[in-house]
Length: 267
Image 1 (cartoon, rainbow, N blue to C red):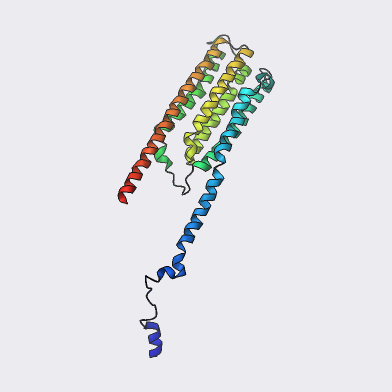
Image 2: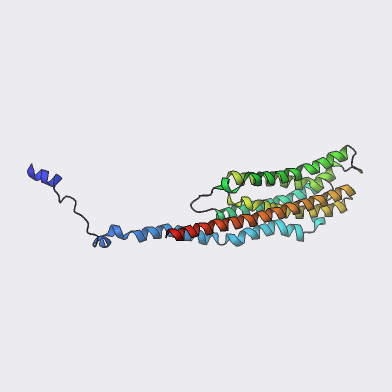
């Protein structure tokens, strides 16, 4: 019994580890291996993201700018009818598919690896209110003009099909933009600041295309002036959004500089 007690309670059951011999023990030599395992996926992910910086904008260029600027409009627009409306909506659908692919790639490149992204502190209520107000105003104005034309306030009257040809794709894509922005806010995607710029830039081209179509279908003068007013409105909104991008970039730089100074002081 004494031997058993000495085995259980003896002082030499657990021997102390000498600190000088600790580096020679294999368990203490696994830190470098653990760091290597953690860094290897990060390096592979970085290499995988590098082509997206070129592929994403290229997709946006091919699906949005090339069909709008280089595709002859008479080959797409078949006249002020349903077929012409669907062909124009098809062009915008191609752009929207490219924009979605671009947003997915930008999200993959911009989302932090640790998935810590406090979006509520960055997307302020005033920013959301301004974007929604600008979109709703751009959405209501064409309908107000159309109702005024139907009531005879604006002369000559514009039938529904020519109105849909000129502003139908614009209204459809504007609805998609509003939905996309709200989803980026809800999903805490880092593309919340880029999405409006992409849609605003294409919307200017879209309305310029509407001005060309207005000449072909002999739209009334008040409709042409309304299209010019919408172009001016969205150029103004685009400029404000670009200033917000610059402001947010400066704010992020100031925060990073502050954190860097605090880290240096702590060290």
